Image (cartoon, rainbow, N blue to C red; front, top):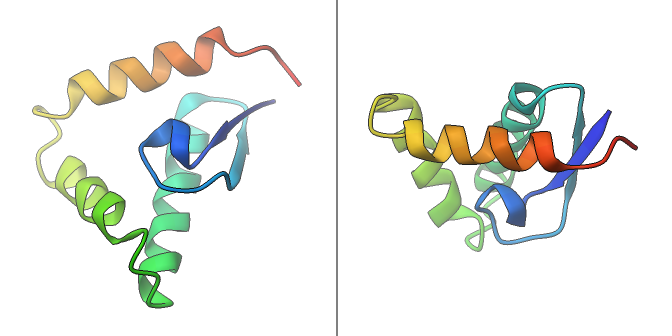
Length: 78
């Protein structure tokens, strides 16, 4: 199990996401950003819009995805 923060994934806060894979923490970040946007948190809106854009245009977002997977792989277990 590894941990990445919202900020490490492109967001504005230190909320921690835990997962066995990079995809686990990416999905947790997506849920976090959606929930924050629904709650009216304007600080998270730019990151939420970026996340929506990544899902709409996955080929353009491969660089972000590869970078995130590499950052996750470099993290210690814990």
